[in-house]
Amino acid sequence: MMLKIENITKEFNLTGAVEDRRIALDHVSLDIHDGDFVTIIGGNGSGKSTLMNIIAGAFPPDSGKVYIDGEDVTKLTEYKRAKYLGRVFQDPNMGTAPNMSIEENMELAYRRDQKKTLRWGFKKEHRKKFIESLTSLNLGLETRLSQKVGLLSGGQRQAVTLLMATFRKPKVLLLDEHTAALDPKTAKKVLELTDNIVREQKLTTIMITHNMRDALKYGNRLIMLHHGHIIFDVEGEDKNKLTPEDLLRKFDELENQDEEEVIQTEEVNENKCD
Image 1: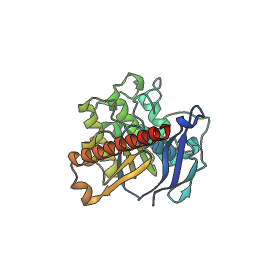
Image 2: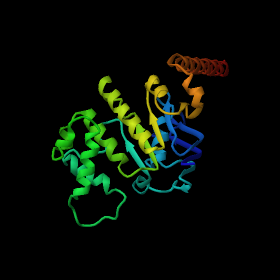
Image 3: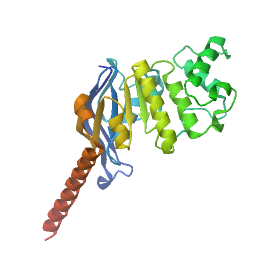
Image 4: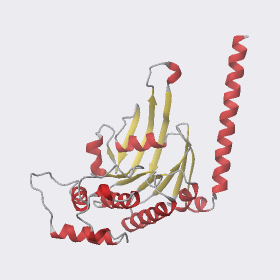
């Protein structure tokens, strides 16, 4: 088991008022095996981003445990947990230092899990690896090592960030809607690159997406979240048989259930007032 989420609960309440209480995750448990590529879908407020942030250590859970490769990392800070994880964010401006060159960014990523020293420099063998990796992108970046990352397009930057996140093979790769800010053509290219890297390195991967076709096309397992609960978990051949229309129907069913619950609640409140 590469990642184990055990009975995780997370509540947010910015004002402290009872009516503002929001349970983002409600006793969620999840086992992800080594090499699984899991896509996660769900509406706004379903708990997708909260789950990702708890795995990454950005949010502490109110209760429950997180295990990575058998080790309890629940109390590890985001910084200390980073050595186990690779992460690509939705915003292309995150994950890299815009005022540093492509090579400098890649060197930092390559040294991520190594002992820190006061020495700074570039090794020939590292530069060779960077050039080989960038060449595989087919974006012409292998001849632009000295260019500042901040001058790259969103798609180029996400591609570089993806390479950086997987240089030192992470235990778990987290993809937080990493193509949502890109145009369709660029998003397709970054997703194809993602799939190639995940397959070649056999990476355990979690990808959040709003695109149902992408959720079905990529990965071996699909999970749907709703109001902080896992309400659908399918993999293998059963996942392959699904269509976007099947997922749309599930979303419609959930929306209808929510509407019925709202109506019932309003009726109860009216009866109390009477």
